[in-house]
Length: 184
Length: 304
Image (tube, rainbow over all chains, first blue to last red; front, side, top):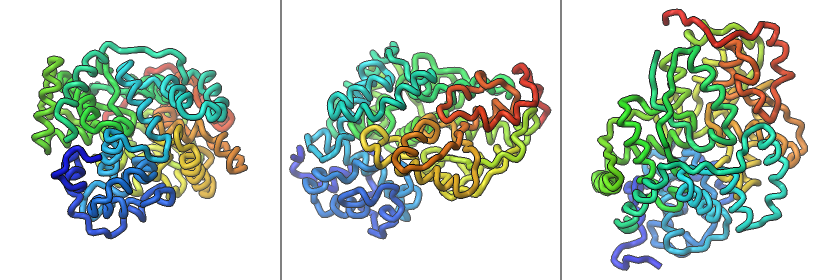
């Protein structure tokens, strides 16, 4: 699925912003040992890095790994080689989505609903993006959220209408210009 | 009066409203002015960088460019916005190819960014620009003897953008002491609340929240004092009922954002402190401290 056949998987990843130090990984495993959710990853963070270096792109990007990253940055704060594993993971996520991989997770849909809200309104409209996510994945799961949603609403914390901001016009232009440079 | 360019972030308009209310309530009495960036847009947070790293950097750069025009430090209460803005700011200084691409995109909308903005967190501003001593001097309703677990969360202290410690920070603890409270040992004070996955992977997130509440309870906390991050605050305040349902626990540990705790200690009433917006109600817990009369927002600050 790679758009550039001359580049190895690792070259592609290293070319992403804040991912350039991936080759300095010493496979010490501090990232996996620190990860808040490692037990849920098919391949925990240390293996993710190893797989990138071994060129195992399809195997990695088809798995549920990377999608359990909660951006707690423990790996990144502790990495003795400063390779920024959390940034590499988010870079891999964006690569997987752009190249059409379908990992077994609904977090991809949540991310897209979130991003859709930004382009539509300029800001994230929490109620709307959550509703969209649940409608696209499992509307029944929304029922579980209902007590909290009602509680948030009655406490004045869940406006039911979006407030689009003028700045979204600028965002649209910025986004379209940023996508002109390709994926790297 | 100290002036800041203020970037609330999207959550502050919804789930973070109580935290935000308190930030504005304490600003004036503490001699701070948070001037909201006009027509600000989303920072992108982690989800957008997971969808498209480059577009995400572009939209964050808009905020940096807007802030630069003000000549003020850019302050945000949200830890996710803080990390994204900080990270992008650093990247644009280090990665010239990327900076050129961003320059091109910003020029399309008549903006420029020269990399001069200092990105800061509300908690860091409260700690460094005011400090516990100044805060203590404004307290009229001390939280004497209240045992609190101080929750700093992840992205306030990590990767590491100017806070004291990325693993076991204590700035919130020091401010809690200034308010008269007694911080308890809280080993998980900078561990994750799982917010970013609370919608799509609720089991994962609720387990992380459960661990935090259990750890606070095990150490005798009656309440939590949290960072101003609306995501952390929502996880601890809003999801307690979900944790209780799943783990058959009976937690009722009110989570006061530091802005709310300061507002209350300054003598502001419940509504002004945003405390009536909390789902795990702190009313009963705070009643014994209410004997000290509420007062208006005029507080005189002695010289530091």
